[in-house]
Length: 142
Image (cartoon, rainbow, N blue to C red; front, side, top):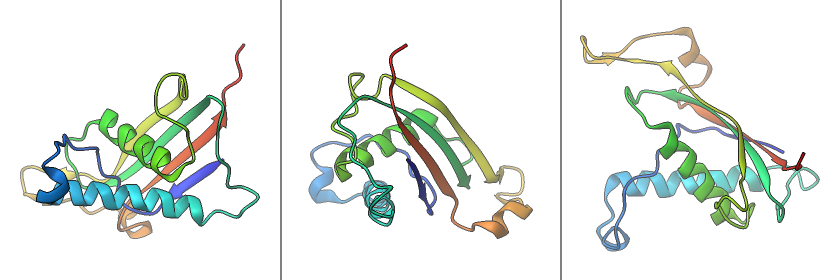
C-alpha cells in the first residue's frame, strides 16, 4: 500500500502532560500532521485501503521544504504515531514493525544560513508545501 501525504512533514516533538492544555504551537502542528496522515489513508480507494494486523515493512520518503536541520528519526516516529492513531497499524513496536525498507529525507528548498532565507529551486514550484510517500508491505520472514 502506498500513502502520499501532501503536506510538509512535522517531526515528533518532545511532549509532556502539560501539552494537552498548554497547546504549544509545535505540538499543534504535530497533531495536525497526524490528522493529515489519517485523512490521506481515508482518501484511498476502499480496495487499496487496508488495516494491517500482521508485522509490516515500512518505507519512508520525505520531501521537505525548509527545516535546515531535521532529525529523520523524529519524522519516522511522527508517521508511525499517525498510522497507529488512524488504525492502520496495531502498534509501533518491533513486533508490529520489525524492519524498515528505506528512509530518506530530501530537501526541496534548503535553508541558506548566510542570507537567512530560502534558496530558490525548481522543485518548490512542483509542491509548495512538501510531501511524504509512505509504503507499507506485509513482512515475510525468510
